[in-house]
Structures are given as C-alpha cells and as structure tokens.
Image 1 (cartoon, rainbow, N blue to C red):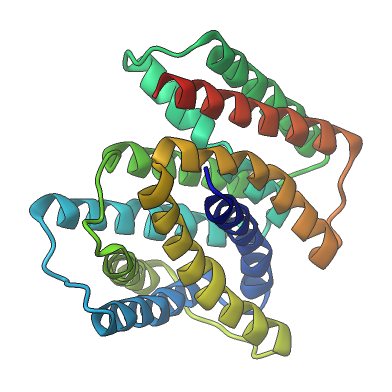
Image 2 (spheres, one colour):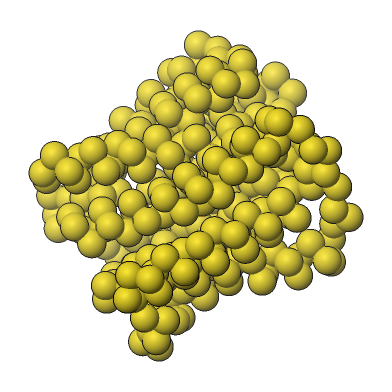
Length: 288
C-alpha cells in the first residue's frame, strides 16, 4: 500500500466520520428527509456533470445498473435516511459508533454464509460484540431514545446488506458517474419518502447553511469518490481496513464540535470496537 493510498484512506475515514456531526447540525434546523433529498439532488447532479465533463459514460452494464440502484436505495436512502431521522434525538457520536460496526456485520454475515475466517478474525468479531455491549449498556442506562437507536441499527443493517449485494462489482472506469447516479437514485427514493411521511420545515441559520454545504460537498461527494478510487487502487478488502478509524473519528469530531459527552465506558467500547474491526480486516486481508 503506497503513501497515496494511505493518505486517501485516512481522508476517507475522517470525511465519513464527520458526516454524523454535520447531519446532527442539519436536523436541528431542518426536516431530515427533505434536507437529505435536496443534498442528494445537488450532489448527484454535480457528480454526473463532472463525470460527463471527464468523458465518463452513463451507459453502464446491467450488473453496474443493478448495483447502482441497490446501493442508491439501501445506502443513500434507507441507511442515511434512517440515520438523519434518528439524529433528531440520538447523539451524533452514538450514530457514528453504530454505523462503524458495518465491517463487523459484513464479516459476520460472510462467516455465517460459509466463508472461512481466521482465528484473528473470530477474535475481532468477539471484541466488536463486547465493545458494542459496553457502549449500549452505558447509553441505555443514560436514557438514550430507543426509537432513534432502533433506526440507527436498521440503518447499519441496510448498509451491510448493500455492501454484500454489490460485493465484487467494479466501476469499469466510470466510478464518478456511478457515484452520481447512486445519489440520484437516493434522491428519487427519498423524495417519495418525504412526500409520504414528512412535512418539510426549515429554520435558516448560519450553522445549517455551513453544515449543509459541507455535507453535500465533502461526505456527500468527495468521500464517496475517494472511497471508489481507493477500492479501485488497492481492492475492497484492503481499503476496508481504514474503517477501524471511524469509531475514533466519529466520537472525537462530535465531542469537539457538538460538545457531546464522552464517558470512560464510551472510550473503552470505541477502542475495543476499533481493534475488533482492525483484527477482522487484517484477517480477511491475509486470507485474500
């Protein structure tokens, strides 16, 4: 793994983790589904426009179209939609911790489906379970909103399912076009959800404007592009190793920008989860 890939992986982890803090700021002043719908419209059009300017084609293979639609619905609409709704009552740090367990859930699902996992990977899965138990015990005792917590859990399951369904699918050099189209799929899906379930509201404020612009351009577009570039460069298994940084970055950014409290049990749980993710990814990397 060269220095460019390492820097890209660090940048991706930082951008991905920061999305929860910016989302928390947004939903304090705007209805979550409507805000996310607008975000995907802008990010999707930007992505497709830039891709066309670079000569990339929207004429994808049937498998690529299938993957684009699956990812657009499950990741962009279900996973992020539920997280945006949940963060009206759930802290950004908790949402980030739950979402960061996705690599563990993917590894667990593959193991249950028959993929062999080295002892190090099994230890990682057990460590992740222990870490989640520690954090959930502390948060539930502290009075977390159970509905918001459930939405975050359903969201990460949807993200895990999306990852499993499009595993091994390549972009064929059209990664920016695929990113843009996935976002437009998310836009259409969330627009329908907004019409069905939400009365849009907005309280225009400087924090809302800054957080929304940041979410559209950085986690919304740049982080996704960096991820696809990283996967194309070093492969999905090695790229996924950087996910072990997400719990640390997620809680650190939320504590820094939102002044969210961080107890000793949270720190212990986050550390154990991160080590579990790293162990699982290193195990799968060696196997690959």
